[in-house]
Length: 314
Length: 158
Image (cartoon, rainbow over all chains, first blue to last red; front, side):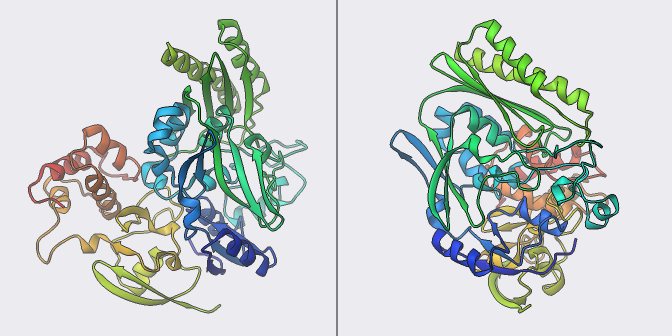
């Protein structure tokens, strides 16, 4: 597949990357592992004037314990994170979702920052330029229709990060640096709910790290996909439990994950939560399995994730 | 758009190439360096036919821009044999009949080399996990798995 033309720049610090971004008047994309960006550029879903390579920023490659949290630099690859002793010891849901992400070869390339910021996907969007143009522009391309659900008033593309789900159940936050300075937000606040730009990052902002409260948890991650060795989730469900309370996150359906608190681990609470997730999930015909099946699998996978987690805790 | 000079090591030799900033490593290897072992199939990172080693890590070269590998050391399937002597993985693929049309083979071998480098004694399940991330539409994988297992046990493997 032929690449469109763009410039290449490499940054050695976050400040330098932001300066480069501003130098290109915002018409640039940040590049980490490239496993999401490069296919998007090849399909002309992104047409940056330049890509700014962040892989040279050493400060974003570290994993450290700081003030009761595990701080993971955004450049850490999924494979490195999967083999981290602290992740293995404290965060089983994250370990499971990392292991379920794509295949190991791509885990060695893809980074945790890039995994969280992967763009949303849809059968009617992740197509060639000619295909999309023939079909007409949808909400995600800047138009005013949904090609997957005719008559719909909004975008129904799917956010497919496995690890966002487990990190949500672990109450993670993300650190962000940009032209206006640094900030830290709860991971829930990263999602805008809008198809064209699914994240709340402002132009030029870089996700620099992920902070997870360092507390031992039990957890699990369950995933529905067609090709077991590599695919994106068609439904994903993560569960983490600590101190008799927990969280469940369901994703792979719609623009942002659904997150639920478990106030206790009583049988009735768990069933009620899985039922609630089933009711809330609104899949449309924009993935390779039918919406009815994916909706059913929300409850099934949520229940599986819960029972695995509870079993493990006993 | 101006081309840029990129220097990297390829199969043990230093190489300087003048490339387009938006050129993929796969294009550079195949079209500038005549190393046509790595193949382009999907071009989107799904199939693994373009796998090469970058600093010892098996990587899909269709997803890498050549400027990204400045200063890196790259090994392609052409760099595995020592003169006339094939790498144990290459021997095993021939011995076990793990090659049919051959289009996936070089990517498959490079990914398997990645596995053997980090885990010299993989279980059958480890091998299946690794080769399943590369698409082969001929063999049904059985003979590929056998070949990788045989190579893992071969004397003098590297």
